[in-house]
Each structure stands twice: as C-alpha cells, then as structure tokens.
Image (cartoon, rainbow, N blue to C red; front, side, top):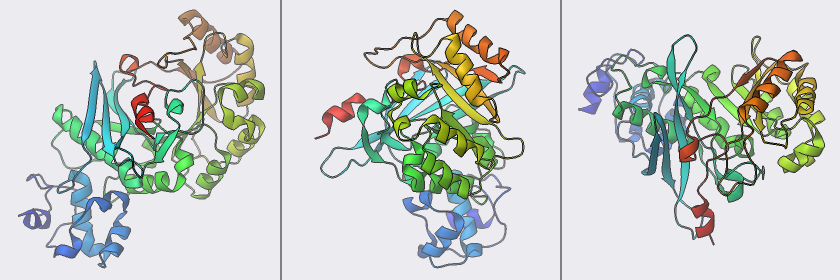
Amino acid sequence: MLQEKIAAGTDGLGRRDAGAPTGPVALDRRHRPTADICSQTLREFAAVNRTSVQAARAVYCHTMRTAAGLALPSIVRREQQDAVLKFCLEVPGTAGRSPFETESVIIPMNSYRGSSWHTLCISSQVGCRMGCTFCETARMGLLRNLSAAEIVSQFLVARELMAERGLAPSKPYRYFLSGIQNIVFMGMGEPLDNFEEVTQAIRVLTEPNGIAFPHAQITLSTVGRIDGLRKLAALNWPNLRLAISLNAPNDALRNQLMPLNKGMPLAELHRALMAYPLARRGLFLIEYVLIKDVNDSPEHARETAAWCRDLRCVVNLIPYNPQRDATYETPDEAVTFRFLTELRRNGIFVKRRLTHGRDLMGACGQLGNPGLRKSSP
C-alpha cells in the first residue's frame, strides 16, 4: 500500500506531495528506510542502499517529510507553560549507564506586525563541558554528544507534536507548514564541540529532497569556539545564521563567567568573526546575558559597543534566567533598559529578548536535568 501511495506522488495520507517525484518507483527491501535515514542526505541514503539517487528519491522524500515507518525516540517528559512546550527524548546512555534524555523547546513567536510562527530550540549534546557559570546545562558536565540522527529526530518529533496541537496545515509539503519556521541550536550543549554530528544534522535538515529547511532559518549558537568557527567558515554556508554568546566585554570578566575565554580570548574571537564569510546582508547575533551587578553597568555597555562596532551584528540582550539554587540574580527592568539605551547611544543595533518558558526551566540557560548527573556513576 505504501509503495502505491509513493508511486502516486502522495504523502502517505492521500494528500499529494508537490515536492515528491511522480511516476512509478520500484521499491524493494534494500531501499526501505531504517532509523539511520535521519543521519543521511539523499545521496548518502542511495549509496548505503547501493542504488541510484533517482531510484531512492521518492522513498527518501516520503520518509523525511512524513516520518512514515520511522521509530522515533520516546518522549519521556513533556511540560507546557502557556504555548511554550518543552519535551525530552530518551537516548541511550554511555556504557553501563541508564538512558539519558535530550531537551527541546517549541516556542511561539510574534512580530510587531502581527505575524506568528514557532521556533524550535534543539540540543546538540547531553550536558556541556564549557563550564559557563550562569548556565544550568554546564552543571551537568558533558555526558555525551548527540548523533546527527538524534539531533534531526528532535525536529521530526516536534513536527508531530505540532500536528497533535492542530498547528500543522494539511497542504502540499513546505518546510514551514508544520508551524516551525526557525530552528536554533541553543539547547543543551556547545554545537561546535560536536562539530561533525551537528554539521551533518544541518545537511540532513537542509536536504532539498527531504526536510528542505533553508540555512537562512537555522541559527547555530556558540560560546566562541574559534577552531570550530574556522571549520564552519570552510564549509561556505554563508546563509547559516550564527549567534555568539558574548556575555562580557573584557577578558577579565569573561574568564570568570566563561572559562573557555582563557584559551580563546576576545581579541582572537573578534578576528575570527571578521574573517567569517557572512552572507551579503547577514548579521551575527551577539547574545548578552545580563546578570545583576556582574555585567550590567553602563561601562560594560560601552565596552560591549566598542567590541561590536566594526562587526556586522545585532546585540540580543537576555535578562538572566535563574538556575536551580541560583547564586546570580536577574537585573530589574530599569537596569536592562539603561543597558539597551547605552548600546543604542553608541550606535549599536540592539534588541531585547522576551523570556519564554522560564517557569518550566525551558528558557535560555535553563535546560538540563540534574538528576542525570546524580544518577551517573
């Protein structure tokens, strides 16, 4: 039955898939997808199955656009606050350990013009080894890297959750019809610390004959792994959006907040960004977490402006989201506004990020299950 539907150019539910090849396609057991397809582009899927791209296209397209026949990871936890949904997927633990879990967040977004969409925040690792003192994930340490398939599966599960909520229209396939219009690598982990798996996941997500998510709608956030930035630049993906977690305008303070800075200081990071091949109209997103009485003074704003001045960028201010048993505090609105105003006075394009999901530990810097660390030998 599935063969007949694919041959007819439908999506498996009787709806015509405008992106699927038409005409009869011969299928046999060699071409039937396994979970490995989530880590493969069309060419890789064809090569693994020892068939041509043309012969494999319909199966690949149908599977990646509907997840038909795929055993996706189990949702082990699901929490919702208003329209923000955090979900956790089970992934195998390392040798001798119980299963781990990923954390992903579906976030509703609205523009001042009245349009609305959803952003999916996904994880690249279970835990993180960067050690940022204001981040909940850093407290876990790095438990393990996620595979490309585990990263892509977060999107496939999110797409199904959107359909359950009635937010996925029944129309010919377009990547945005699931309601998810942006993917951000801002969940657990440092993406450039898991470079090969993350970049392979991006290849799969952007495969034109599959999910077909455009580079321009994907943002990779990094603490500033300079080695990773140079490798990413070599891939020549100018439309991929890049976010830099800055959080301090000088090395002395950044060394305290972000230990990576001791080996990759701000001057070297600045040079790496200046050499990065941005698209003609592209901008870096400079993320700055405002922490009360730590990095929120007018002088810090002026230093930040000086560091950003010759970069093509927009600064994204993020009032600190408390960790469990937090030692830091969130500045009040007046301090946040003063910092934002000082940046603008110094000629910097700046936005303030609205907080989503703070109460369910789903906001920026809050992802991470402390129970996993405690249960690991």
